[in-house]
Each structure stands twice: as C-alpha cells, then as structure tokens.
Image 1: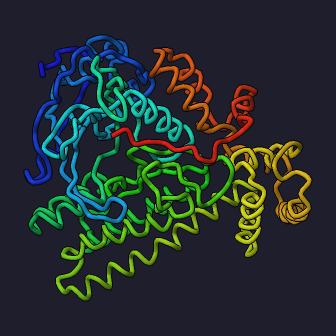
Image 2 (image 1 turned 90 degrees about the vertical axis):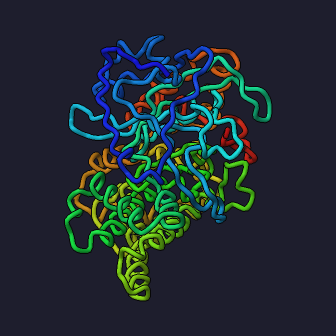
Length: 489
C-alpha cells in the first residue's frame, strides 16, 4: 500500500503493536481493483477529528479499500482463539486489519479497523474478503444501536472493491471501516492462556487495564478488579440488548469485547413477535444463541475469561479458582438488576416495589402467548393507544392492565412524567427485518442507496416518536417466522 499524504486529520498511535509479537502479525491490506465509496459517516468522522470533506472522496475510498495507508498507521492482524458454538478453535483476524488507534480531539483512543481487507495468516483457508450486503448490514445495525444508546462499535465507511467474491453465489465485494474502543476480546485472553507464556498473559492484562481501566491498574488485586469490571460491563450490555429485543446471533467468545461494546454484527436482528426462543442466525440450528439464552451465554463466556486469568489471580490454583468463581457468581445478580431497572422504566415506573419483577414477567408471558410484537407493544403502552395492538381486548391482558395502572398510581409522578419516562426508554422504531432487507436488496442488487439513507435517517433518533417512525413501525401483512440472517463470511 502507498502512504497516504493527505490532510485528513489522522492522528494515529499503535500501542497494540507494542505488545509481545505473539498477539499479532504485521502486514498491509491486499489492494483491491477499484474502491468506490458507498456510504460515509460524516458525523462520526468529525467527532474523531478527521477531515470529513477530504475523506469523503476517491482518495478516502482508497484508504478504506486498503490501497492507501493513513499516515502513522502500522497495519496488523490480531491473533486470538475462542469458543465457537462451544467448540474451542484457533482464530484471529482472518479478514480484518487494525490500521491503528485514532487519538480523538477529546483525547480518547479508538481502533480503526478494515473488515474484508484480504487474507492474513489467520484466514484458515478463507479469502479474507466480505460482501456488500453484510457490510451494509453492520453499518445499519451498529449505527442504530448507537442511536439507541447501547455501547457498540461504529461504522465509518463502506467501500465496494470492484471485485466479486464467491459465497453461495458471486457477490460484489466490500470493505467496512470499523471504529471500536478496542478489539480486545475474551478470545484474545484465551489465546494468551493457551499459547502464550504467563508473561504474555500478564502483558495483555496490563495493557487492557491501562487502556480501559486505568483507575485500577495500580491496585494490588488489579487482575481480579479487571475481571469484575468486565463482568459489570457485560451485565449492563446484555440487559440493554434484552430491553430492545436485539439478538446478536453469534455470541462466541471471540465476539465478546472486553470494553463492553457490542461487536461483530453478523446474523443479528431485532425481534418482532416476542418469543424467548427466537433465533435468526442460519447457522444456529440448536438455538444456542436464542434471545432468551443471551444472558446465560454471556455468563458462560465470562467464565471462560475467568479461566484465563487464574494464573494472575493467585499463585495457589485452588484459591485462584475460588476467587474466579466468586466473581462470576455476581454476574446473574448484576444482570438482573440492570434488566429489572430497564424494564421498570419501559412500563413507566420510577420507584421500586417487590412485585415489579412479577408484573413485568407476566406482561412478557402475555406477549408470548398472544404473539404480540415486542417493540410495538411497549409503544402502544407508552402512548395509551392499544387499539389494534395484539393484546387489545384479551381478558388476561385487560386484567394485567388494571394492575399496572394501580401500580402507576402508587408513585408520585404525574401521567405526563410517566409518558415522557416511557418515551425515553421505549424506541418508537427499530431496524425492522423487512426494512433492512429492502434497503440491502436495493443497494446490493440495484445500486440504489436511497432506501438505506431514508432508513438511517429514521433510526437516527429512535425515541423521537415522529410520524415517519410510526409509519416504519407498521409490520408487514405477514411476518416470516422462518426469517434467517447470514454471516456473510
């Protein structure tokens, strides 16, 4: 790759490249035939301190396509290993490169990664490329998650490569430029524990502390504190996923970020009719990563992280195991606290009563029984517009509604305050599967990005409750229960 010498605003550091060599392989992207910018995130670019005007151009596309290297970048592919559907595998960035870490005007450090940039030593026989559709899906969903207020990686740009790739058919190739707090994963620690020396594991842990938890890096028990902080972040994150009906699809340990961000949007989607068993991923044939399983899988993944840290927790193995088990045992309680707090807000509760958990779970059971749409049910409750909803007129729901109103009456906030509280916690619009598929089909097959831009505009402020959002919340005449999404790897 040539060196980009543009006044772009790149302010890159490469601290990850100063870790032991075992954690990465230095290499450049594989150049592509003719990179063309498909979509560019001007607001994100500006917040990162980048010159959006310069980067929203052909020369910018050359950077995102891997044909030009930003000044100061030291591209590398990260090594990691982890559990995929419960099976441990050697993994790594098989189709991605970390260009470096952008230091923003606010002094924050964020990874800039190219996804789909070509083969690396970790490609395991793959071509290292990605298709337009899956990269645009990640752009839509990650930006929607950000707008929902959920910690997530961000999408800076998508370029087409001018080359076709072979999946189930020939598809146009693309590269996504992803922005993340970091790409350190549970699987990065698994790699260090399996193939590194204890000095390598300690170096990774110390680096992670310095980067994400500097307030505790000097503590005597800093490695236990590291585990505890990651548990806290993941408990809060998964509760937020559940709150909006988001299904990640592939919660392998390599898809759990230490930073607490949602990462790797493959076969992800948002639930329509409420059903804890909902699965969208075409490869999750056993339902391991179903909506209702996500909290349990998160706890399982965190236990795998704890296992890697045992040598750092205590020199005595039995004591180390006990320390780790005590820490992991806190996850369920933390998750339930965040989940219950979020669900209380969704039904307009400001204070706490012992029976709130039961009240909320009974509503969810009614939604499942009557195949009620998850998002639209909470919107209907928020607006008091139950006519036409899936639960309206059902005797069991009518009885629940009476008890809910009585519960609202036992708090001091006014009706208007309750409505505003619910609006802040119940999105009026989500990336509906049919709307996302329509946008992707028009873009990938017809080169028409107008539908995608309209969708992104509607999703930009999901709590606004605009007429346009109400229109997009209308479900198709028949929701396909067999709808599946694909990784696109």
